[in-house]
Length: 240
Ligand code: MN3
Image (cartoon, rainbow, N blue to C red; front, top):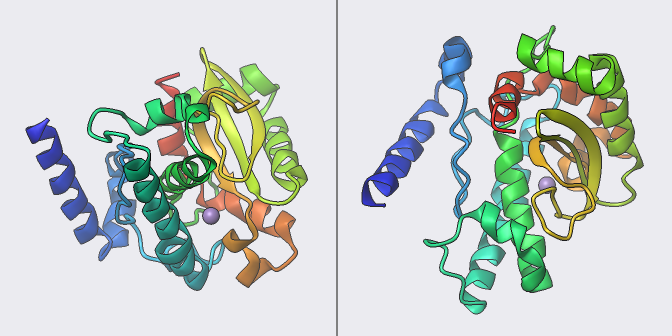
C-alpha cells in the first residue's frame, strides 16, 4: 500500500511537470497514455487548458476543471466522511457498484468526481484525422457494422439526453454499446440502466460547452471527435 501510494504521488508530480510541456506528450504517442488510476482526489491534467482548442476553449476548461469538477471532488469527500466510508479500503469502482446504498449527495458527487476524472483522461490535443487504432476499429465493425454507425449512435445519445448528463461508449465481454445516463450517473453504478465498462464518455451538461457553443450542443458533439484520445479508449477496451 505504501509503495503504491508513493507511486501515485510520484506519478502525480510527473504529470504536474508534464502540464508545462504538452508537445512532449504528443510526441510520446502510446507511452503518453495517462494513468487510468482514478482515486478520490482530483489529479492534475496532463495538458494545458488551451490544449483542446478549438474544440473546447481554455476558459471553459479552466472553469470546468477548477470550479465544477473540484466541487464534485470536495462534496464527495464530505459525503465519504459523513457516511463513514473508508476510502483506503474501497476503490471508487467498488463504491459505484453499490452506490444505491448511499445518499443522493454521494451518488451525485462521487459520480461527478469519477466522470470528470475519466473525461479528462479521454481527451488530447485535436488531430485532423483522428481515428481509432486497428483493434478498436475491428470491434466497432463487429458491434455496430461500421465506425460511422457508432459515431451516429453516440451523437444521437448525446443529443437526445434531455437536460444534463453523459453519453457513453461501454464495453462488455468484448462487445461495444452506446447509451447515456442522467445527471452524474455512470455505467458502473448499480442503479444505472446502461451498464458496462466505460470506454469513452462525453459530458453534455451545459457547463461543458455553453461559453463557446451556447445552445449548439450538436456542434460541441461534432467537434469532440477530433480530441478523443483513441489510444486511451483502446487501452481501456483491452480490459473488457
Ligand atoms: Mn462537467
